[in-house]
Image (cartoon, rainbow, N blue to C red; front, side, top):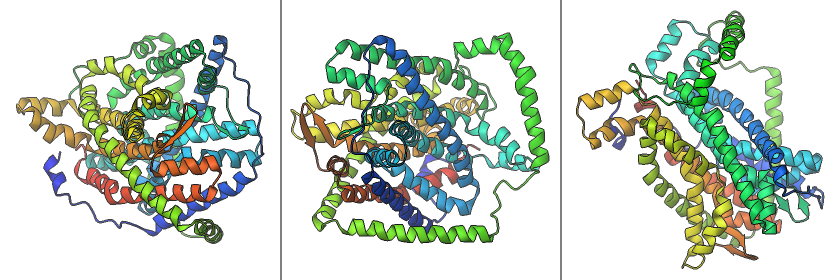
Length: 573
């Protein structure tokens, strides 16, 4: 494995900073946002919301509704991750468009554009269906990006000898996916799924309590229950809601995530078995159950064998790098229509943007700079504590057994639920809202880093750990030559999604309504929130696109370069 000193003088392959794919993607996003604004204007002037019961007996049904929305969004996220990440990793032509698109999409502050998404859907669909779809889309956007980045990182860092072995055994696309790609990326996929699920709670709460003026788009669920209890000052109902939320998180951890982690330990790339592999009482229970063994032997195994044989006959071995189809007439016609639509939409978007006065553009520039400083501070603070804690949890299974449920609960509790308490303390200090905004960004940022670092540390082969012990390396030498290079790809993945999360959190951190008063500070998030409240769609579009462009440029100048270093220098081989 490469030494960390190589990082100081990296020599990644050359890549252009800004490509035609980036330009197309940015125009496409701008046109889609403009279309949403046009539809939002046609939304119904008033929408009557549901009646939220605060009876404890309603909580099981509300919990089921909330978990159902999360599960639907996660299923979409997983499907998107597997298909999109693989296409970006293996098709270089597609990568030029797909990775810029992923950079842009993960940087779109969906909280800022939830009003547009919801209002545009309500203009063409029944209000209840529009609210449900918007909530699933919102949760999907909070879950999918770090999963996709993690899966892409896994595929691009598969050891060369394993790639060569798959070619020697003439594995087709399906068999390669089943026996190489999915096992190699399983640990990363599971840890990022846990992070995505935890982060999804924050956006679920935001989606279930959403209102715009006289339009009440609230959804029955844990989020609306807690909000209604807070509005009525019903402390007993608040307590019941929080207990239910925490209990739900613990049950999901014990029955789903911990068994998956125990099962995924078999996929670690090592020649020596770990002394303390992760364990799960529920996984052991299922593994020893006769019904489970019967189902595996008589149903699951024969079914997978038939699927494998059918896939082998239907799709013989092909080069996994993928072949680019030759252009044909329908594709050319579709491309012409797409270009025409983009040109027209780009023209109309430009008209809306040009309607903004110069002073608002100046305010947008200042706001981007102020928010960028807060994002960097939050990211640095997160790195300081997540690296040592994540490595400790990932390399010590006994410690992971104790801390994982605590981390899962802490990451799943929506930061906005305790933000009013934080704000009450910080508003009395000089520059209090600035400090509170950084803290809220940190609370929404740190978990992406922590879960990815845990995944990277837990994937370090046991034989490398033994080798470092036999060489009697000091703690610093062990960190410098083994731990930091091993977690580097995961660290980059976590940092990309964490920085995107911090930009997104700026919308609720820089503009806050508390105690009947509105508190705001200079920042692009505050501008987006103000534009949303006042229905200034031109400012909303300009501020959102400015944030997107800023994040894309940062990804191109810094994070993409680190991704290339991780791909070329820090493979586990």
